[in-house]
Amino acid sequence: MSTLHEYGFIEQDHKQDILQSFRGAELEQEIMDAQEAGYDISYGETYDEAYNNPDAVRRVFSELGRGQQLFAREMGRFDIGYQSLLTNVRLGAPSANVRNWAKNRLSNREVRAEELRLSLLYNRLNVQGGPWHDQGGKALALGTIVDAHDLVNKEGIGAFERISGRLDPAIMDMTFGSNAGWLHGLGLEDAIISAEQRFKGHTRNVVEQSATEEMRKLGEFTSAPVAQGFRDIVAYCTDSLGIRSRKEEVRLAINKHIDQSDKDSFLMMSVGCGTALPMLEVMQDLKTKKRDSKLILLDQDPIALAAAQQFAEQMGLADNIEIHCEQLFHGKGRKTRLLKLDSILEGRKLDVCEDSGLREYFPDFLYHDLTVQAWNALEDDGIMTTGNMNKNRTQAKFLHGLMGWPIPVQMRKIDDIIRLHAEAGIPKKASRLRVTQDGVYTLSFSSKAKA
Image (tube, rainbow, N blue to C red):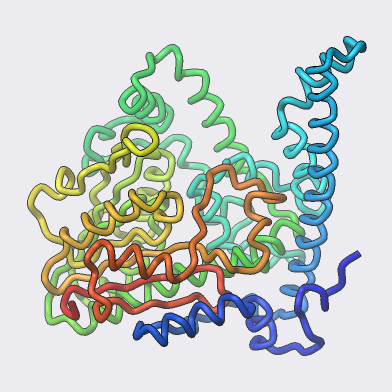
């Protein structure tokens, strides 16, 4: 069994010791290389409550590490057995049972992977995180991570008693408002059905069953109680620290940019917005400063947009948002093309264009396209904020291993991010790079005023 020392921890209860363990030599070298190349790059310094409990961070890191090891070991055994059985089948194995097993069971590798995830992680008595896992990588799952420290703990303290955090069960019965384009007047289930018809050309009969299933999963997610083990995972695991650090770094950078501006009103856009919490919090900050703002929300998931509308209503910002449910890209492979941001902006220019959680799902050519479009959409003094998961981050295999995040994430090295921005025409001096203090993300804040 692995020890804490094998994961790089030392026996001191200091935040810096934990962070040094998370960052690792490879990531430190990447940062030094970028600095030597003349880039403004540094670690973030945002606060997270998790660092008040270093023992819990160590414990969760170790538990998830052991779970990932068991998962990898069992999947390795599965792969060996699978290949052996396939060989037997090709050679005409005499046992019909063996052939049927290979065809009906072992041919679906993900079935076994899901069994392991449930037994090793989600279905454990102290976790009970199945409804969260069933969200399948949707933005709502990230919302839970953002609210992790406010989930009710074993002492009964916390703002939210459900694993959905601030997302209220009332979302099941919500209707989109007049600021939501073609979604206006639709309930959530009808919005899901209409989006499938609109984006994929399916008939209503085809998508009704899947929409009903999506609503069932959403209902379970917004009603499931918080188990202590689940709360600990979303509060203390390294990727969770990264999600929250990313949100806070984006918020701080945009606030700093706006504070340096003499404008009274700001137009902002979040591309692939998800639940839009970081940008809604920016709008709250602006409201406190008595400065006007409008936020354009663009996503292809009506459930995420419904959550964003609910959060905007909770924060008193419902009149300051504009919702667009549009397919972000069309086609397959190298023929894939991004939605043209001009079709949403209709001639307007942006003070802020944010997409800090989107590009890690894009191959390089789409990353390039989005960079060019976002940069061109800015006012002369506007700012573009982007982000990507680091390839050399700790427990990188956990995301697509034991956790089972279903959407492929394109993790990148810092020099890949630098290269892609340069190829899109972003001047070196225009960008400030910020690596979240946990080492999970690299964020880029590019100002046209400095270009």
